[in-house]
Image 1 (cartoon, one colour):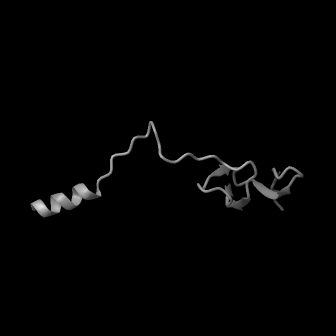
Image 2 (image 1 turned 120 degrees about the vertical axis):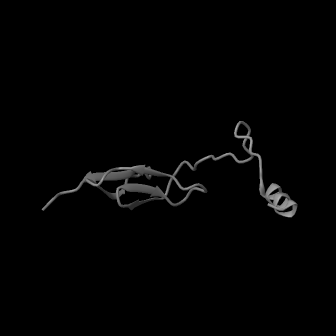
Image 3 (image 1 turned 90 degrees about the vertical axis):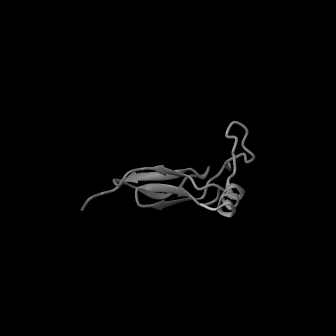
Length: 76
C-alpha cells in the first residue's frame, strides 16, 4: 500500500462517539403505519421503524386516536 492510499483511507475514517450522538431521534406522537408482510412499518418518521405482528394478523384500519386495528386472519 502506498503512502497516498493510506492518506486517502485516513481521510475516509470517522471516529464516532455513541455516548454523545449528534442526532436525537424523537418519534412523532402519531405514526403512518402500513403493513408490509408480517410487519407494520411507520412511513412518517425520519428513521424507519417497524413492529412485527406475524403472518396470522392483518391491519384493518385505525381507531379514533390513530392506533392500528389488527385482526387475526381468517383462513378459508
